[in-house]
Figure 1 (tube, rainbow, N blue to C red):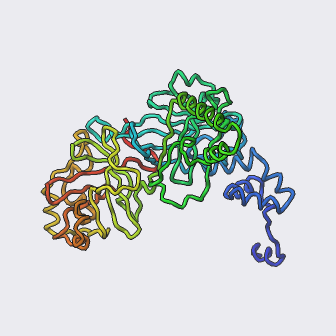
Figure 2 (figure 1 turned 135 degrees about the vertical axis):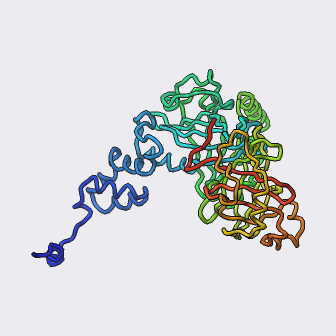
Length: 452
């Protein structure tokens, strides 16, 4: 029997992209980026019309990239172009995850962004006071698109309002009664954004007429140490510098300057919200190479639930810091100010089972500190059999003793241990006491867990 493969090779038959059915073509093209789509459209007149097809190609691109996390057809009430939606969601996608508010925050400083059916929501997150591992999530920021394709952002200062997707997309709800503030969100690189009140909205402009500004690249400095006043109030802003020199050379400049200052003062009095800066918490989840990395929740020294942040440095060292407690207070600054870590080590090498008898006794003789309501936690089995790895750690005050830096890996001289459990969580303790603080994940697979 003749082999069809040999027959095809003999005829030198080839299959081009044009020979595929349209649905297969759309599926392949949906993996490309907009610049790649533009380049592909230049190859054929037929492909130009295919690449411009909003309802097919650009919908396929949106659906493939975000369809599992949000409902693409509901954005903007289903009336916006998918090309606009793709560009907007591409800018907003980096917001997903945890952020910390800069400066002196009067509310819980931790913000968690997640996908909604036709919007993005940012919620303030704080440890619950229910005696368990619960987390309180309060609405903070709502982001969507109007049917006209314009950005619609509202901030909820009190975290109590309930807003429907239809109200948010239309921008025509009675937001003043709900104490919602229309805002602009300005992205600065990938690790910093600023929220400012949208005064144009209050002056009767259409919703979202002042769209968010995205600054791509150009941010080479460490944004955690970024210091800035509110735009328009800093004496070094470009507009005020120009106004200063113009007033010195223009007739009547002093009068114009006084009028400008009076208008700025009136504008500030009408504001309900001061500008707020936020910095992203990168690497907020563990990985196989960095199993302790991320945000965790566990008992603080005052026996209340709090959040811990474990980070790895460029040379593999590990440090753990407190983020916020159950009262919502920030425990460590977001600016470049060195805070004493809860524990640290310069060598992340774990020891594996079987463990030395001394290590088994050290673990088995300790009391596990965990919320009272979590008695059903897996670590109720406190035997060494639930431990998969052990890491030696040092206390924060050892940072001031240079010769101690080289003793981290020595079990005799180390000041504490991290016990990693078989379920991926861990606990830590110090030789100066007899406790183990068991930690759990704050979020898994992009979703908060144990929400109250």
